[in-house]
Image 1 (cartoon, rainbow, N blue to C red):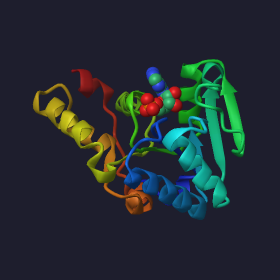
Image 2: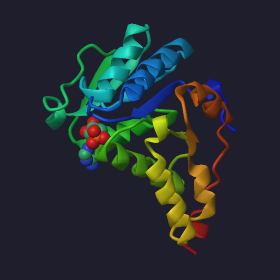
Image 3: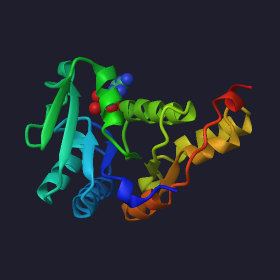
Image 4: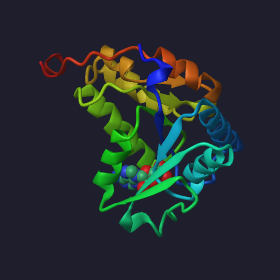
Length: 197
Ligand code: AMP
């Protein structure tokens, strides 16, 4: 089990679009408030735009700490957020994702698009390979990630993923469940050999 005392930084993966449903926007604001109040630092992709910008603003406005990590080539596209506690500019995408992972004690997946999905699968598969043991929480706000969890069920049913892989992540339906989920995340024991044999 993880303990909340171990969670000082939370990496949030989420969309660079701002056109999601109002429920997603409310969840972003709520998340910012909860993180600032709990003293959990936000680590995120460093942009000012979309859901990611909203969450960063919400944490900052409530007196929390925010570390943005953005690759140089995206600084103009995603509008590097100059109002965060620290903005780290990396040489490339791989360094960005590596640094986001290293600087975080846990990961939260909010609604997002293809980039969010790529980041989600990378952090899940790194855990599957035993490269980290950190909690991964999927925020299924308004059922947004329903198709994703269904796809994982399908992979398990078709024997391309193992039943144990369900323990790689935890699904919550609302942001109110975040702190309890972070405290109660069961340890994931990776047996890399068993995965391949
Ligand atoms: P999206 O979910 O497509 O709006 O992207 C959300 C974030 O994921 C953005 O900050 C993207 O820069 C980032 N991202 C990470 N990896 C990738 C990737 N391989 N392709 C596209 N976006 C990515």
